[in-house]
Image (cartoon, rainbow over all chains, first blue to last red; front, side, top):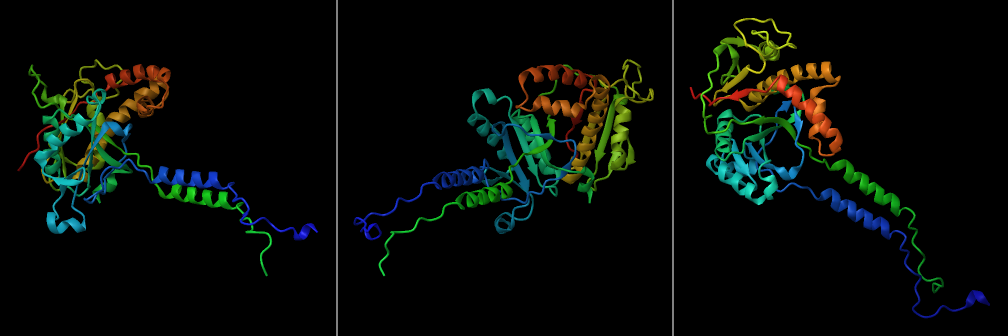
Length: 160
Length: 201
């Protein structure tokens, strides 16, 4: 009787591989989404002001970021509560901005070195004195193209 | 009782659903950052070789003090009126050489848009947000005028054309066409926004 034919020893049914593509896609999408182009974590409060006449910053490889704001709570003990400049992963003084820009510029490919933009991500509560000092540094190293990064919105919301 | 059929096959029909669920979860939670902001050019540090003489009436001075108050052409002004005032100054057209301007031809204000300069000064203690608002209004004044002329000449907004021109995904044939148009409008109202050294007092 066929019903009682004994299976050969050790034979297991083949594992279904129909879901393999799904798993692969899942992993793919996972890595696609978690991989961000961000190369530094924020150590300063960074609530940007609003503006309406904005232009998009195209091509991330042509942008150098400078963050300014009050240090976040875990750094406040060491660095105080006055707005500070963050370059890559560390706090910096105003006079380091120039050399930072030059170093970053040297890292970029030759053909991009003349078209770089400096994106100033400045907290809305910072004072202009610091920004003026940064602007002076930028002018000294001839990095004249700046972008005051803002959120899109009504500029008058800033005044409240 | 011993099992006769070996391990039962796992139903994999819902695997795709789970994968999609995860995919949608990540799609929703990740924000792809597109930075945007106000593009500005800083003045070069070396002074120009020839001293340009600018008449006082061609300069529109905007001063921001540490309390965020505006002094425009020596008058205290509300920030909400800044845009209109700047537009009126830019297209004042005192010498009548600008054919498309709709200004009042006030002899004590700017000669024509190519000569008009906006000078922005701020205190060291001015708040950054106030400064950005003022910058936004001044850039907005230029954009309003440029949009008006672009609408008249080409039937679309200047900001729209510029955004398409700067977008790297725009095909080069379209971009070449836009380049001339954008350039033409920019020459009509050149953006001359000077940022002088900050005062400390």
